[in-house]
Amino acid sequence: MKTGVLLINLGTPAAPEASAVRPYLKQFLTDERVIDIPALPRNLLVRGVIAPLRAPKSAAAYKTVWTDEGSPLLVFGMALLESMREALPELQVELAMRYGQPSIAAGLATLRAEGCDRVLLAPLYPQYASSSTGSSVAEAYRIAANQWNTPFLSVLPPFYDDPGFVRAFAAVGRPVLDDLGPDQVLFSFHGLPERHCTKSDESGGKHCFARPDCCDAIVEANRSCYRAQCFATARALREELNLPEARSPIAFQSRLGRDPWIRPYTDELIVELAKAGVKRLAVFCPAFVADCLETLEEIGDRADADFRAAGGERLELVPSLNAHPEWVMALADLIRRALPAEVAESLG
Ligand SMILES: C=CC1=C(C)c2cc3[nH]c(cc4nc(cc5[nH]c(cc1n2)c(C)c5CCC(=O)O)C(CCC(=O)O)=C4C)c(C)c3C=C
Ligand SMILES: [Fe+2]
Ligand SMILES: [Fe+2]
Picture 1 (cartoon, helix red, strand yellow):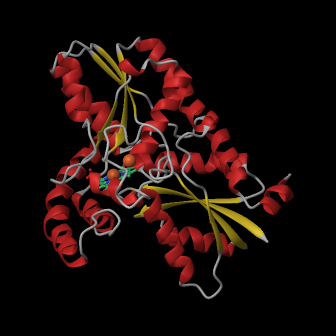
Picture 2 (cartoon, helix red, strand yellow; picture 1 turned 90 degrees about the vertical axis):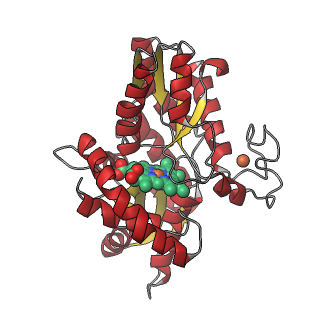
């Protein structure tokens, strides 16, 4: 039986124009795992208010990072796909996006056409969130469940503390740190509404946010908690890069709406750090394996401007893993280890 791998990332609009961003935002934000309110108010809010109002602003932001080849998230995704095909010549590897194109349905159809009845889903999010990993996996299951000949699916679990992933991020970051000599290093993760972490609490709400140190270690109750997994990634990177905790804080970026999101907020912390006298700041974004709007524009441009306006001198965004050879090696290793034993053995 042939085995395929479907790499899945979040997705991006087809063009940096409001007319292309609007349908992307609609598809993304009407997902019940992203805006988790009942369907009727969600659809009214997203279709009637958020998508129309946000699309032009979002499109203007996308324009600032768009390349001749397209959206950075997709361009880096395609580069990673090429490298993964070279690293795993014995497997069929395809790339899909949860929202927009190339779709998960198209990726699964291509793998079936290539004769792969067995498919490993590889969601490219280091930390588990229902709105990212959960949604991508659920969409693949939904499509598979609608087929007469269902594919046999397995899933690569979150890799937030995988030594290869951590080593790869450290390898990308080291030259930036050597060049900048930062006063502090910030680990800025994509944010989430607090409620999403509470809902991930496996103890039924007794663990997460019940104590200030609830996420300081991975335990049974918070094993699916995004915040706990982000903290674990930061701990592993600090250890790998020999960074003192007091000079390498964590913050959460990209919040949307009025609900409380997990704190501290990156945009606020960056200004506080500058005002407290931090002059050179390096920023890792280890919730993303590819550079995208949220790294290049939100951190590389906007946070940099805010940092300097508040008295900082230089903010450097550590590039994402993209198609870095250490990441390609680490991901190939993660995939090999996630394959069913008999497949892995047959590959040698
Ligand atoms: C890293 C994993 C991600 C999680 C978890 C996540 C949750 C989440 N996101 C929004 C709202 C938006 N996110 C947007 C862009 C975006 N988000 C991620 C990743 C995660 N999001 C990526 C990789 C990107 C970049 C896509 C790109 O094209 O470069 C956007 C769109 C851009 C904008 O208008 O700001 C929105 C909106 C919510 C509400 C959420 C969890 C509830
Ligand atoms: Fe938690
Ligand atoms: Fe997001």
